[in-house]
Length: 118
Image (cartoon, rainbow, N blue to C red; front, side, top):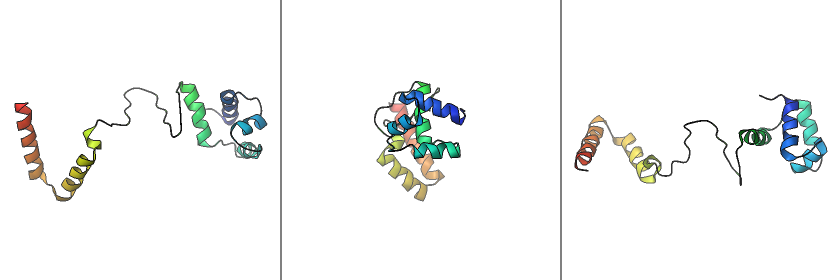
């Protein structure tokens, strides 16, 4: 983890600036009072640190509400996953409320029969 001064330097690099006044303007502030406060508390808001992290990871973010993921075997947004469909969610809700082992055994038996003929 970077210390506070390293984080500020990384923000300078990310935004292509060399002082707090320039950085404040890049971040949309009308003065550098926010950065004065950051320095006093030795803490930068997480939303700005995300920019540093994404830049260091080589991530590209376009638009808003982005997520940066690094590493292996990551999965996100299972749009083709049946468990994410309204019909499956309805089934799960009903089964949770009214189902039991016997009901589940019946579903498994029927699905296995379908598997055999497929």
